[in-house]
Length: 523
Image 1 (cartoon, rainbow, N blue to C red):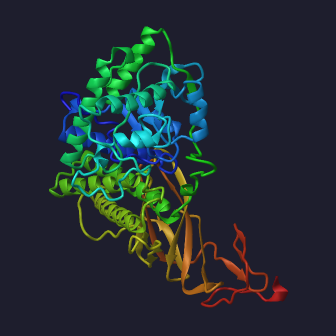
Image 2 (image 1 turned 60 degrees about the vertical axis):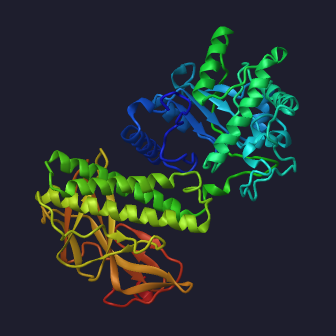
Image 3 (image 1 turned 45 degrees about the vertical axis):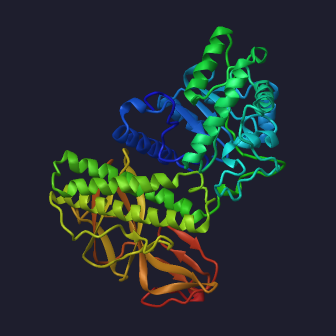
């Protein structure tokens, strides 16, 4: 890194999906990755070039975040093949990606390079013919003595070690691919990535790729008539030369606005199913982000209020772990739902653990901020998950219970809150102002069981309207009393009715447990 032979690109916790991830998650994983780099490698190695080659479609929002984060350039891959063809014909695979609101102002412009071919692996990066390019992936070298099962070139032409006897022929073959690729770009600088997923994990590959390419580069560069200077370099080296050439030629890159959805890699193979697949995990991601953001805010408030117990460091560790598990799920095979079942189960378990860690921070912070001390008698929120694969279950609120609400936003909020109670005569009041009227209504709990609607015979749903100032707590007390608005169920017309609401249901019900009913002639 210090000699600039190796460069960290983007530096996020993951390479995030750009269709399903919320911007909070995208920014959070970028911050987490950069903080890790600063703490473990050093501030001098902060990334300045972006690398997003595997998400299934690209969003201008991410390029905007990169621009705001002081990134200079970016490399993309998964763009619709017809769009690639259109751009390649016009030598516009490199462009300034401008936000739609940018107009003529270039303040949002982000230098972008789109790889021209099918994939980012070695068979599809040296030039237009993968049958040839694969022969220059020297990890696949025959007779290496290593098990490369499944890694043979599909075109049945394996790489061969470069020697004095074959370097002329092999270099000419590779040079021809470089030259053809160069015709697709505005400048005379060509980027040829040399890698793939799960690569450079053995000393053999490092040595074999380097030693063979050095021989090829040396021969190419000695051929004056080829007019080529082939060498190893980083993405930063590449963009520096591109900008130099543009400046020398007094030229500029074209401007492009919009997004690159929906992605297709061939024919009519549109990659859109991942927008909605595994909805449980997609929803889990959003709920977890809410918990983590609330935990972050309350933890910060504790610090402001002077929370200095030994527990503070442990809570911070829980917060970091929770953020990292949430950040991990932003991966382009995580929130998309494109991982194997066992991997998705692992994602779910990690998010479940992150939620539990966030709940502990929230309850500890609320206890400290409200009472200036910490204890163990606060329970976690009214909805809870028992496992990483279960739907949330509401806790039952009994008489003399208190519920504390927190508004994590910077503006006043008025929300309808619904809880389950075990008594029909339950009412809710402000703990600090018990004589203040709280708009509320109690009604039955309806469940769809065995293809029919059933009314719970033991529980009721109490809904009330809560108005909470910005970044504030509000405490409510549940006690026995006379309900302000009791829901009325009409047996024959199958309606739920109160003074404020009329809800049409789908089938007939029987009412028990002191619920008021009307006969047909009363309707």
